[in-house]
Image: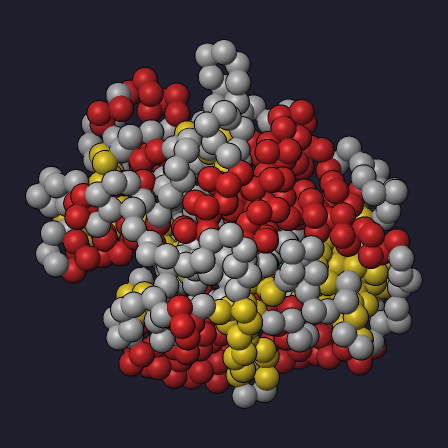
Length: 565
Ligand SMILES: Cc1cc2nc3c(=O)[nH]c(=O)nc-3n(C[C@H](O)[C@H](O)[C@H](O)COP(=O)(O)OP(=O)(O)OC[C@H]3O[C@@H](n4cnc5c(N)ncnc54)[C@H](O)[C@@H]3O)c2cc1C
């Protein structure tokens, strides 16, 4: 097997990975590699629509952004992390501006900002409703100006190689040839995004299978707060594709079957701009109590933006108009958009500290795959892309500093061999009668039915049993295509392997947390319980399944209070 070496390897080329690559590359000409299973601008970040949050204007303040984030998080965010985040976010907006991001502007030429849920001030910087698309192209272009950054596009990372709790490198498959390589590095930055594809109805790309979370978990990094999955209030029916919160930020209404703006009963002050957990629960309650609309694809809620007028819709929300016409069959200029909540974000992820360091020396985690914890039990819209920028930059710098002070360590050859055996003998070589797609769809159905917005102990227990059975059945799969070159069947099987672990950790963490906080809502424990549960969940990988421990929350300025909007 070929062995390659770099000072730093960044796994993932979304906003977080590319921002880390730029920060690391600017550091003393250090040798940086970026490995991505898809071509960089196909990373999910390119789909980000509504905006990137940062304080830019008089009238807004770091304290206000921090307070909104902490309250939005239902007090589970670590407040030192929040403080650092809000202070660094504006620099990132300006950096993107200098690198060529075509931000939407005000009449007098300033970067425009729109309203978003849970934010007390319009602080979402946007480029129409294609913010991620523009940010990604700017970052990709910038990263490619450095001759000390090498891209491994369409390489699939399979495992981390770790010796004495220190990173030695990783194994990856070059998807084009199907050959496995070992890559050595002094530092590795995990930037592999979320795991929303454990669910069936989601706003995320098919690539969001949480690979990096499982890869890190299996070598001893903890997964933190995995019970907290965000459900976005406006997934287009039927495909689940996102209709940005920017539609409500620009003034859109949510209506039930009686034509009522029902949010007045759930968040009378903020209405359609309350945080996502509250609106998603309100929509589900309307549907469950018989006030949803009915269509060929089941119950839904109406998102009405007709009153904004065609001109404004075309200027501010061109993408979602196009998406609604092509994938929903309706023109939002003329009709309300059919929507319902869809799995949208993973507040949990690889346990990392404020410097993005994980407990494994030389391993850093940034972006959606990480949890440090900025978003606590519920993330505010626009805080993810800014999280990716701020902590991507910090992770790149920290990894570079680490790499400067260390030498490559010897590769643990036994781990390289067992990685190869796992992929080619146990998975590609398996000759059972189970289908990858069947197990995958059954997992998603379990998650949709039993680990959705409202949860119960019985439902979670039954989900856990179901996922464990699927794990057993995974041992008997067959991948029909036995060839090596561009074997998407094999990649699908490897992704399913990763997601099964993540489904198990998500359910186990949710079952243990006997309270309702942020996006985790238990029918059998309906109240937030600060006395027993103001703490982070940490899941450790063991042969018997996840073992849970807990860690304290950093409270600096704001002790928990009632959360009303
Ligand atoms: C439709 C949509 C709209 C959104 N809108 C907004 C918004 O307006 N504002 C906001 O703040 N947030 C928004 N979000 C959330 C935000 O876009 C994401 O949380 C964020 O972009 C994640 O970025 P990332 O860099 O962490 O990961 P991603 O962009 O998901 O990138 C992951 C990278 O990891 C690589 N990778 C994964 N596994 C492997 C592997 N095994 N081997 C090699 N490479 C691997 C992939 O190739 C990819 O390059 C939106 C999300 C969606 C889905």
